[in-house]
Length: 114
Length: 113
Image (cartoon, rainbow over the protein chains, first blue to last red):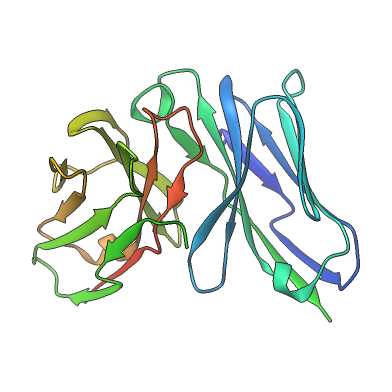
């Protein structure tokens, strides 16, 4: 079982729809990151959060530490949001070679149709 | 543009060869991380340097090594290359030892034939 699980793996939406991507993890963490990977391969950091909720434009990220769960929401989705969204956690344990390094989910591939 | 640069963008080489990937962090960032992204494994942490010193090691093969120079740029050396080493290699930088947002470079796509 992976330490970081994302769902769904693939998501197709119509422009304007509200989108939710989920991330569950099984290790103790100090922070959780949401990353966006464009079709060309480049990775952009969207959010880093350790509690509560953050908002940036049409993107909202929430985390529930007790439930070990985070969600990424996209409001009023647009074709330019089409990308792979990756959840990564910074563990507090020794996994990954050392405390504090990132463990990644497999990603959610989002396609938004016009 | 994250401010992190990586060269080369693409690299095609043969099995058994050795290559060097280069990363320049954002101005002022002391920490550099190397990641490998392959189709079957996804993103995996390889190694981290902080201000010239190795800070943490992840799933890095013995055939791979890295270093961070006094000007803070870093190089990842991959030797005795195998077909399975074909992947995207990213570096990222952050301001402190790791408890910060990381900024990713554009990646180097390595193809081993």
